[in-house]
Amino acid sequence: MGINGITVLLVDDQTLLRETLCHALAAQSDIEVIGGVTNDEMAIHVAAKTKPDVILLDGTEPCEIISRIAGLRQVSPESHCIVLTSLHHPALIEHALRLQVSGFLTKSLNREEVVSAIRSVSRHPDQILLAVPKESLAAVLRDSQARLSSRELQIMEKVALGLSNGQIASRLAITESTVKRHLRNVFEKLGAVSRIDAVNKAKSMLVLGSSASVNGNGQTNDNGSREKGGVNAASRGVGKGRGSVSGAARANGHEPVVPYRAPLGVMAGS
Image 1: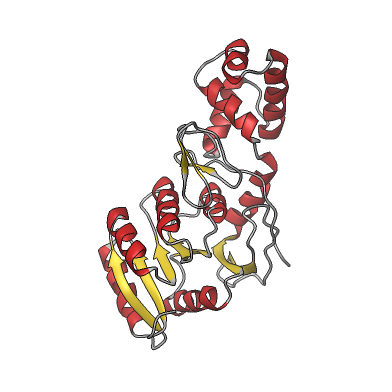
Image 2 (image 1 turned 135 degrees about the horizontal axis):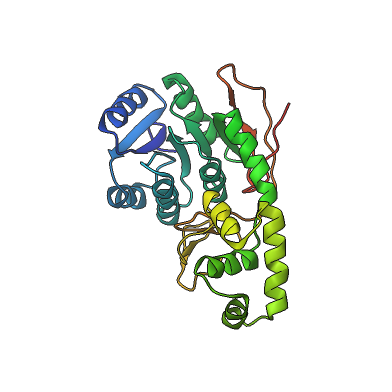
């Protein structure tokens, strides 16, 4: 924590919202705004130099948000990242949690709630704050049951390239029967009826994408393998994990705040 309180860096492409938040936060006696920036290059430079206590960030699309989180966590791993966005796709929420954000909030929150969230993550680093639509959280829980293993993901990426079972087996140095077994598991998990259907459903869950991968610390693998705790950089794929979410439902239809540090497997509280 800085001399003047909680140090905060804001990263948002929307100038009006960013400046409004900067002024609102600067008015708090226990919060010190160290900067408001518009892009990843500036954000990484400032975060690496200042190591803020909290980074409040958004992006224009899910892949930009995930990439931004990964880059910031790499240069300032001790900073608490809070996503404040109008986007609440279930896959985005999951992948942000995989990168160990300290909060995922929607822009329907008011100024006091955002300020409270910043204070909370600073005082309770073992907790994560969620303020997302109930239906998005329900979808996170539902989609977690269809998680693909790293091997299943590798095979589906080859299927998406149009390779046959034999070609996939050759490239992955496994037997063709093993490929078929994994594909049966994928079909069952995704409720798919064909290879094309499985690929389309995997893409709709943001499971398939480029071969680069990013782990929970924002590091990449050029060989396309998925590290434990990692997430595919373009597809933002998902993996296994356990955690819990508790708290009373908000009046505006959001499910708030919870002790949560494991990346996935969220459980709604009563």
